[in-house]
Image 1: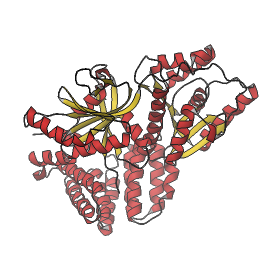
Image 2 (image 1 turned 90 degrees about the vertical axis):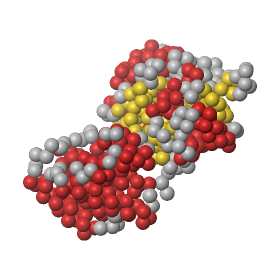
Image 3 (image 1 turned 120 degrees about the horizontal axis):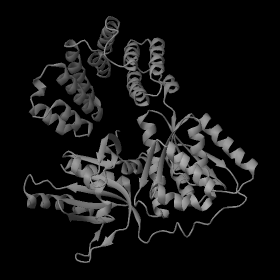
Image 4 (image 1 turned 45 degrees about the vertical axis):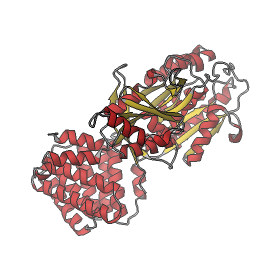
Length: 524
């Protein structure tokens, strides 16, 4: 029998049907103790979110009942405030108000409840909001944020809940904007320039002013000599969190994009690198990046900024330093400019003409023959029905993908295939998950090769570790992908499925940990 914590892990991974099956198989649906009832409420709420119309209302109703029963069995405000908000979402505002009053009474009766100060103040704010006492709710929410000013994810969770409540009450939610976490930035621009001292100073001032005006607190990009380093330094100066995405890893990237411009830029690179919150290396590691790897890294950095903004209920923004008109911007900067603009996100272009451009890197950034950015899918073959049956079913389910960039092929106990478009790969992954398969995915720059024995196109084994590990760790009927894949999907805009962080995955070969995201159909 699976424990409640194990079942919760399945729910967090997006395997809601499996979580329900395990919940019932373990007899937990007949368990009327608060922990089981709270998990039941959580599962019902998750199912309500993916339902529509009357079915959604009914599931919200069942979730509210589960939390309310849990609230009668313990003095914690957690089940009761959930019951109150879910009662509202199920269409019972009077019941929601009654439960909200009980929450406030419990807060008054037990001021030392073993929860964080933020949670207590935010719970009070939620109860007041359910009572339509907006001004008092705002005061309590401001108090909560003051008690934990950097607890960004807690703030975001509260903001999401408040938006649901205000939408159900048909009330204006614009006042929440004043309490949103700082914005998430994608940054980039041209490389080192030999500009006049006054021109460099004006550029630094323009960058700092834009970061301030946009309330930027998180930055995602590379660290090349020139615009990258100037923006990173300005972000760090204002206390922001720097998240680096470096094609080839720090050493190979610096050798190509920093060292040719002189020792001063390298010192500044090393200082910023040491202060970075995270450093994500884009494979292949320790190999000089080419134009395709740099393009992929830009795509991942843009997607990471979008994911962070969404996770924190804030907004994304892009700042690019260019030395020409936007329409004429070329290279990776021009591609990032166009891709971000196509998504309709906030964008600032800072003009900084260069008097003389430093070393010509065109030779060093030449494309590697046949290297391509590919969204790789790995399907785990389980032997529950025997290997022959499993293979036969996999062949049938994958028969329509023979025109993929890398068509399906068998590798040990897994089937691999790859697409040039992350959105197409995500749709495919969800379709395979609906058919019951365990699917893992990754987004990589790779050189496919032709198998001389079968004549089929293959992917190098060394590049497949994350995709294979994701498939191995994923529950049946679920598709989970790496952070790079999730980022590429995010930057594709509103056309494809969405992803949600479910945890970290440790790679056995390197011991490194990567974030794992579950794919979900986009809500209508």
